[in-house]
Image 1 (cartoon, protein in one colour):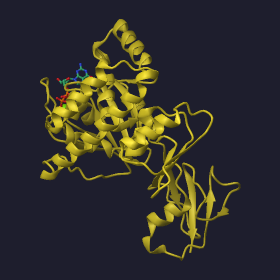
Image 2 (cartoon, rainbow, N blue to C red; image 1 turned 30 degrees about the vertical axis):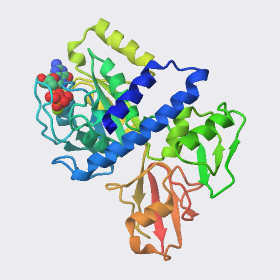
Image 3 (tube, helix red, strand yellow; image 1 turned 180 degrees about the vertical axis):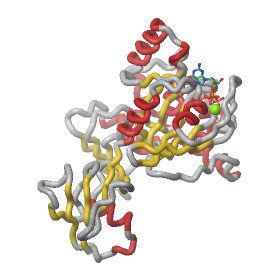
Length: 366
Ligand SMILES: Nc1nc2c(ncn2[C@@H]2O[C@H](COP(=O)(O)OP(=O)(O)OP(=O)(O)O)[C@@H](O)[C@H]2O)c(=O)[nH]1
Ligand SMILES: [Mg+2]
């Protein structure tokens, strides 16, 4: 039996098995096996070198990927938001390559990627789904684009990405596995963990881990435990944009809003890419969701550069800035002065570990 058939068989078994306490462990084992087989398949298929148009180099301060079914209006939206000219059409699969565009907002360069309309089943390696997945995995934010008349597409794609190891709007489970040479599996867990030691041990064994100290500090599911063991999951934030609102009446809009609310999405942005409605709100939301930190550098004795901030991820420290501006800094960093929200007082003297806030002004003294 080939890898594909094996994958299909396990997927069918999972789909047919009701999920409850009694089957949880069995399903967990199946999912572990499934992950391993899919990884093998990906390995096998990635041997042949990349296809044209998929190796989009990352540019700008952050990368946002547009994800949506064919014809929802991704290319139209990219063209409306950026300087890009992505081909649009009223037929499906107009876009066959990844088209980048740059959006400048609040002095930040945001790269938007228009990826081919994803189809269900891409995870099985069908079409160019696999290459598309690799583009999505490296994005900083996923922008799901849904047609106002078919919001169901959003849920289907989200599930599809989940199947491909992309964990949306989640953080890595608080599970640490320290492999050992002997001693069996030693499970250490906090009170809120409901998985039994047996389930945890068996799941590890399924992955060939028989000696390890496992620390579980969160009430994880078997699937999350698998994720922690596999260590090849990516965790990406997402947001939803509902397009073509120009065509919808109040009844349609309400149905779409209700549907998304049931799916846990209560802050989708409605736009019309064609009529250019709602785009400013969308830009604002993309910027907010990226959680970026803009730092204005101020040379010693000079004025801050408010035009070109250094853009970093939330949680960035003075050390991260130092590293970004001069890689030759090694050892020559003495201290820094900070003005802004992260400073206890204006011009506070701080060390490399100081965490910066958005719009801080920083002077590095070396
Ligand atoms: N009325 C209306 N039509 C739109 C809107 N956005 C896109 N369209 C139309 O929808 C069709 C598909 O748009 P595209 O931008 O090509 O869709 P796509 O998601 O890029 O499609 P693929 O590249 O095939 O995945 C085109 O005929 C667009 O003119 C909108 O906001 N309102
Ligand atoms: Mg397109």
